[in-house]
Amino acid sequence: MSDTENPFGDDASSPSQGRDESTGHPFEVTRNPGTAGVPAVREFTTGRMPCAEEEALAKLSFETQQRLAQEAFRRRKLRQYRTSLILFLLTLLSTTLVGADYWPLDILPGFFNVETQQTLLEHFERTWPTEGTPTLVDRFWQSIRMGCTYSIPLMAILLCHEMGHYLQAVRYRVPASFPYFIPLPLPPLGTMGAVILQGRGAADRKKMFDIAVTGPLAGLVATIPILYFGIQSSGYTSEVMPRGFAFGQPLLIEWLIEAIHGPPEAGMTFHWNGYATAGWVGVFITAMNLLPIGQLDGGHILYTLIGRKAHFVAWGLIVVAVYGMIRMDMYSYILLLILLTLTGPRHPPTADDTVPLGAIRHVIGWATLAFLLIGFTLQPIIVAEKRPGLEPPGVMQKDAPRDGVAGNRRGVRISPQNSQNRAWQTLIRRSHGAINDGSNLVRSGKNG
Image (cartoon, rainbow, N blue to C red; front, side, top):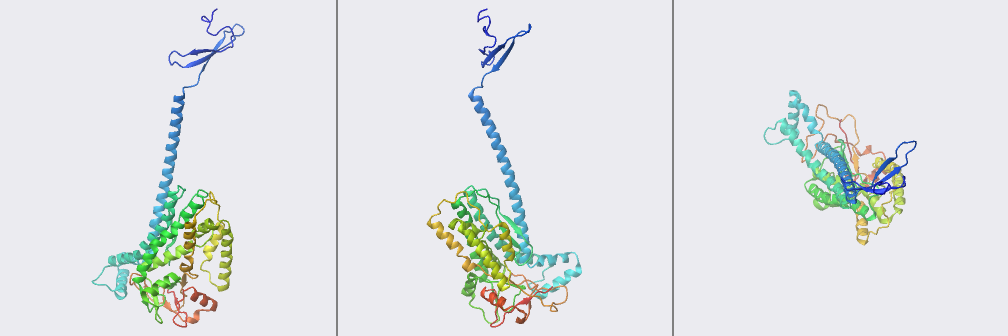
């Protein structure tokens, strides 16, 4: 049999080439020898597909994976955005309530009880006189507006701070979450600030520096004008701790108050309105974040400036702070130190610690850290002591809001002899948080 008659050739196991007439694709054909009268079996092996089809399939697979990844990323970002928005609204609510001294919650029962409504209206008429005859609804919205003089400026400051971090992270394509605000409906702040979750090890030295330093600087850009306007629209009062506590005044705020209003007269204290309080909180949060420890902004900045030497600085500050609190019997930052110790004072390495910063960034970094000298106070909140037997009787135990600031829910004068620790008094004076009426440290107690 010739090759034309037997396309498989003489060798039963030798392959031969063929072509599919319908598709034109080449194939190999192999003949296996039959046994015991069983005819040979023909095997067809299809050859490789053309490169164009492989490329088309690979491209389709890649595009499918891309679409799935983009959809997963979009859903994750949508969840982050939803969570961030909910926390933002809750924090706005909590800071508004604190700024209004919880008057909206006190007023709400009056809408459901005629006797309570009459008591509230009589109290407001006596302590918060206005033109005309406002209804309880009018009083409710007055208290909301008064609370917003604190909450809206404060939320603007926090938002500027966190968006400074976030936009820099987006600029450098470093994975970062939306800002997460932390509501805390308790006086005197109403919030614990906000955080951004950032991918560890995704930023090199220069990127980390830019992301870290932009937050405090952006926050200060919003804080300074709000603080200036608030101090300008506030003033001195003869009341002592009208809200049951006083704010420790860092050098920056002391300078502004004296530059605008002059030094206080004997027996006078500064009366903070909502804008001034928001500005004070902005200075406090910025200074606290610039502490060069761990994952705080100051920790990021110092690590990018001096590298691993920042670890020794962080541990040294913690040891000195603990010793100082024990020695002087004041524990304003004890919770912060516990959290920083648990999360770790050491800063993790960046993606590349060898990237140079340049002279300009070094100057900006050290100047930003130097804000601690004028923005930090050892005693941020001076809480009034409670003196039993001085609480006024009756339903209402606080004055109505005045001048855009919550009224006296807690403020009562007490004698300077209640201060038992001389070292504590000295430290309070040095931290600019004392209310000194010449020779005595005057503090007020909490009513109910």
